[in-house]
Image (cartoon, rainbow, N blue to C red; front, side, top):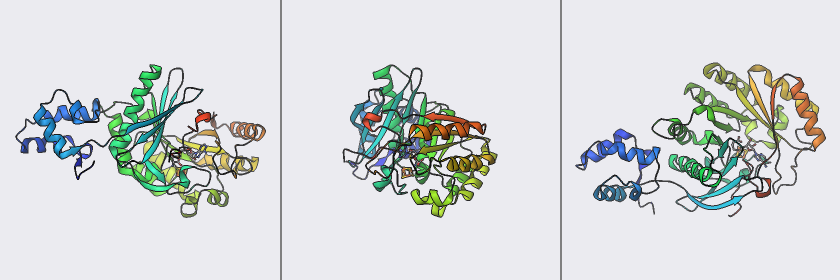
Length: 347
Ligand code: SAH
Ligand code: SF4
């Protein structure tokens, strides 16, 4: 399908303009094309209805629009919808639409699989196939916007990069797509409504700070003890918690943003009071918000969700330290739609 054609979503407005002029077309057409690519996105050139047939053919002969196809939908009892997106090469990634009374959140993927191998994570077991392109990231959102409107008459209010993959290992494509999501030339969503979730790669977090990003940063901490964290998150062996803390201090200084910590409570793994004490201690270096998340079981039976008693004790302890604590009970459990638990079961 790709036939050596260029993905037009990688071109800037000026680059499209130059190509048109070289082919004897009017420069102003570039702006119309750009609108069809980003503002009212189409997945094929035939959808660009205010453009001549000849120009559409010229575009079709030379370019593709690298988007995604909705392959399958599963609707949960609580209305959460899991979407399997098929990519041009047949690979599948997953996204989730999480509706609530006055919000609709899209959870999207950044990579096919992930090579960081967190032991508790279903995606981590798949290994990495490839990065998603800018268009593949952007069009997951476009499809979820349509779905939220069609099914629930809701506008999309939030985006979380918490599906498959480690967004900071597909840095350029993730940043470019989020820039277009928040741009007036694209979906014009405030960057404050976007959250990037990372396993916590200090070097890349410093880069985000240097690039002055305006979206929210969430770090999947899951343990504030180096030895423990390294046991189930191998990435911690190369990036210690103190390096991570330094990069977060730097991020906070440069962007003035509060950091969100995600903490998945797993029975006997990271849910003791000692774990909570270490976590609270780790939160002292900068302003934080904490999301304590219920674990969703996967095929790996070593990891189970924390029982209610320990869960509540952990939460109460964190709150007693005057920390901002949110509790996230899982949504879409009956259809395995928890973010981070999306492992392309169809495969
Ligand atoms: N790679 C990034 C983003 C994708 S994972 C990261 O690790 O942050 C998104 C979130 O889902 C992470 O916090 C991850 O730890 C969490 N997660 C992974 N497996 C899960 C499971 N089985 N149940 C609940 N959350 C899970
Ligand atoms: Fe990758 Fe995130 Fe899963 Fe870890 S939790 S394996 S970083 S997707």
